[in-house]
Image (cartoon, rainbow, N blue to C red; front, side):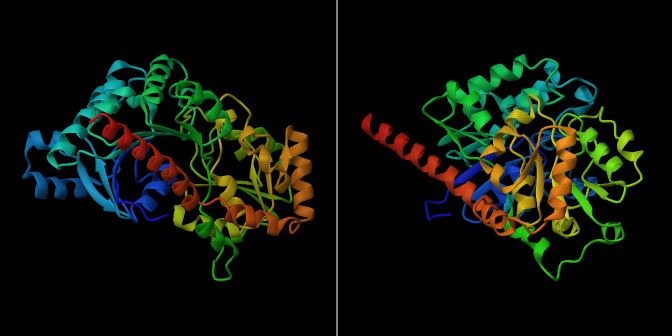
Amino acid sequence: MSSRERLTIVCLSSQPWQDGMWTNKQHIMSRLAREHRVFYVSFGPNPVPKLARSKLRRRELGWSPVGAFVEPVSYEQAGVTVLDFWSPRVLVRKKPANHPWSIWANFDLRRELLARYLERHGVNDAVLWVYHPGYGARVAELPHSLLLYDCVDEYTEFPTYKPDPRWLVEREAALCARADVVTTTSAGLYAKKRPLNPERTHLVHNVGDFEHFSRARAEATRVPDDLAALPRPVVGFLGAVSDYKLHAGWLTALAQKHPEYSLVLVGPVGVGDPTTDVSKLLAEPNVHLLGHRPYEVLPSYVKGFDLGVIPYRINEYTTYSFPIKFFELLASGKPLVISDLPALREYYERVAVARTSDEFVRACEAALAHPEAGREERLALAAANTWEHRVERILVHVDRALAEKARLAGAST
């Protein structure tokens, strides 16, 4: 990152900090925290152990029953101050995401509690870095120097929101119109959001953690026992095993055509889509669902892959999706087979692309037959698309917007 005035950044996330699958939010905020003051407002179920919560509240609040609802549980991670606000989950536990109580608890109440926190701690000039569109334009009521909406997904296509996304569409449109900067992670998102704020919307596509996943090429990295014991070749997938994204039928076809292959899926089942059915995958003896593994050890699993795959469905969600795992897998140097994902089309010369189940099987066969072909090009592409690059590109837009606001303020005095 280039040298610039130290910023105070308040990130209103769409994910708990302690989520085992790091995405844009944690990657970007942990890097910003190297040079700036960063507060991270967690989203979703409280990940802090009950004992830690008790100690924090005893120390900070003296067991004040009112304070326990107003003051968040806060802790430091990777230089970031994580804020976990109370929400009345007993009221919303079985309510759909579009229920008024759920909307109020997840966004409106959290915003009000955050406003009180910022006032108590004297934070009045923060860059508000918003990830979830559910906060809407009213997030601008928080004291701030700049409002940025980093649009990383088409949330209206999530299974939890898709049944009735009207409220979310309205809130996102208002947020985009009000934002000083809107950044999008794919060309599809850029085309869809730009009309809402034409002059301030920018494409800054997703990237990967090159340094971390380069460990898959290190001699010292040890392949975990649960993977090392499997027959080779190993065809590997990283990420959530969820029906709304993953084309399990393609994997089943590959497993049936090549019983000598080991198909390994490293990631939790059903995240974002609790109706996910993995029974057909489990019915194949050479398919192995290993479940969630900590981010720290993922390179060791990738080292054990002979081929990486991203067999995503093509639908209204993935049309706008730029999977982070694309550059992560490329950083290993291993060959990669992907679906015909619109966001990745500019990189098709570096990977194999499948549009049907049969094409997927043939592409995997060809990639395994010539694993070294294009290796250096894959590594160079991954090295040129890191989180440091994405952070700096966004901050350039932040700098310009802050300078323009300062100019307008000076002109009006």
